Length: 304
Image 1: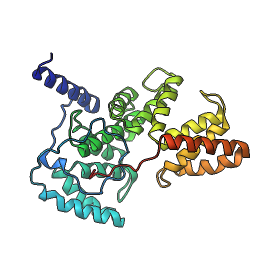
Image 2: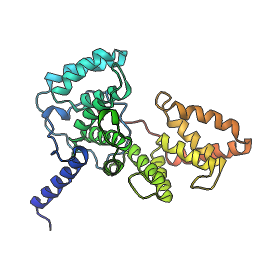
Image 3: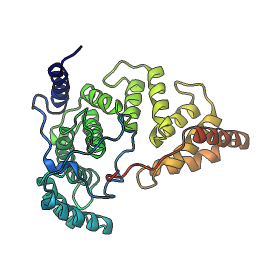
Image 4: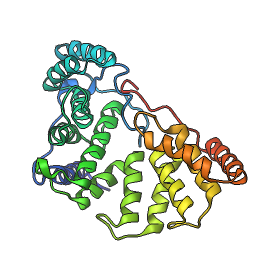
């Protein structure tokens, strides 16, 4: 039987390996007492995923009043589209220990909300959140935020950012995706599928790639559904089947946010014009069967 000491050593060894993957040799950061409490309803942009563990009792919190007001103001200005003023309050909350504020700063610099797109700054904020990851974290909110940050960091490592001195490192990206996939994160599962299809960071294995894409599609992740639609339409790595292409794009259209995936919406429309009535009808029927077995779910908000 393993002792408590051995369990702790194993746990911290895992965190050290993850820290090395994130920083190339810097030890993992600690979580401030206030980081476990997040503002209600201010997290809808997180990738949706099913937590690996059931909800546990939340840890006792320290005094978070120093940054909670900033988070409330940030939420208000963000909802109004005043990203400049939202960022000011997010920066204060981030410095005081709010992980969700830090995540949103990373997202704002990634997407250019109120700032010029800056991959380097986005990476810095996401990495700060990712370093707070703990595989045994009982707080669902903290787990969701940190796992999502792992995926964001991996996205940048996968493609690299030469202008920001972030070198392309698909192996490191694959390792981070694997950690997030262990928690059921659909974007990580999808990314691993793509990497197997392309041979990025791993040996090219199309069959494995298709299996990972199917796994992400069972979580109703729109990019995975759309990719399966393209593969079936063109007959790449699978038997050509335009009815299944319609099926997958119908499912992707159901779950894709138009602001996030306009290309899926556009492709869905042109695809329907390119197939026969029989293929369309058959594909739509298949989509109904799949959606009944794997219904789409609303992504959890930060307060859940």
